[in-house]
Amino acid sequence: MSLKVRSLHYRYGSVTALADLSLELPQGQIWAVLGPSGSGKTTLLGLLAGLLAPTAGEIWGEGRLLSRPGWALPPERRRMSMVFQDFALWPHMTVAQTVAFPLTVAKVPESERRRRVEEVLRSVRLEAFAKRYPHELSGGQRQRVAIARALVGRPSLVLLDEPMSNLDARLRESMRLELAATLRQEGVSALYVTHDRIEALAIADKILLMDAGKKVQEGTPQDLYQRPQTRFAVDFMGAANLLAVKPDPDRRGVWTTGFGVRLHGTEEEPRQEEGQALWLLRPEQVALSAKAAVVPDGIVWAATVTDRVYLGAYWEVALRNPDGTQLRAHSQEGWSIGEEVTVAALPTAPWLIHEPMPGQETDQPEDASLQDPQGPGPTLLRRRIRKTVAPRDGTSHRDQLARAPEDSDSTSA
Image (cartoon, rainbow, N blue to C red; front, side):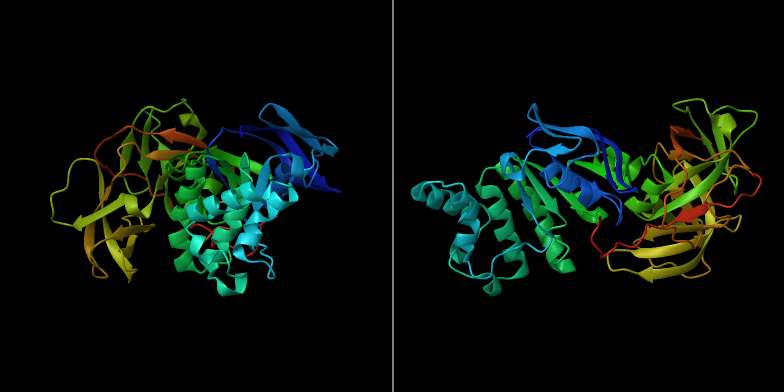
């Protein structure tokens, strides 16, 4: 199903749960709706399913009006299906009976019903479990039953409400790619609601990031991770170093960190006069080498190791920059505390986020090196830098390291 949402609003009394949301979901794509608890994800799902009618705006599917203010086409007439967070399997029904239930309600002839149940059970690799009851299945098998039931009626759109939240971490990892493969094999459009950014990155063709009932950003997983448009998007999509840079008053397009490294490039828009910006540098984009080692030309500087933690696939290394600010890096080597190393920034086109002018109100702490901000910052304009030059001395500024918020275990609203 191709889905169009136009300026959607929804209010509970005086509370605005969804505000001015628009999106277009093409046929056959998987979209993840990502955000913290209370961001409006589940409200959006209820509106799309026809369980709620919008306060304002419209929902269209395949050229047909599905919802308008005060009215919603009933769920059973929308050609949609839903996979619930707790799977909602009936304990008195076998796997085959559960999967067949939508066809039974639709009065599909028994021979066709049996054929389609066998077909969808094969697609989720459960044909050998057709006679089992839910309590005889593992968590992953129960999830596949719920998915099979959602697919057996050949819907145009599948809505998934945090379907992996009840699985343990190891099973979630194995089920992510399996779920995406099943949905793509069936060729259906899907909207996958989650607060887990790893699930969104792994499963989705596109991500809709939400906060406080509003769209923050939409785009490919690479767009949101590598080119976030706001401080909130930076924080929510993963661990990040945010290094403060200031414009060179004499050279347009040149930015300088507090410890003297210069970035030189062409902005998308000449807004350099607005003051300092934040240079986004993910920990995996920081390469470390011995201080005496020869490194290629680029963005390089010296730093001191202050701590390191072994995490299996890599060491997470904490560093102190020349001006005393903090940096985190992922390294295959466990550097010694106190050791001086050479830092090289890997992106050839660093991504800048523009801050308000000095003196304007901002929620950015003066030293966020050890902070874990939980809320959105001001809306910021992003900048691309395409060329770098060698470091030089400069006035010290506090750089900022923004950690992503901890994943919430509660259901989003």
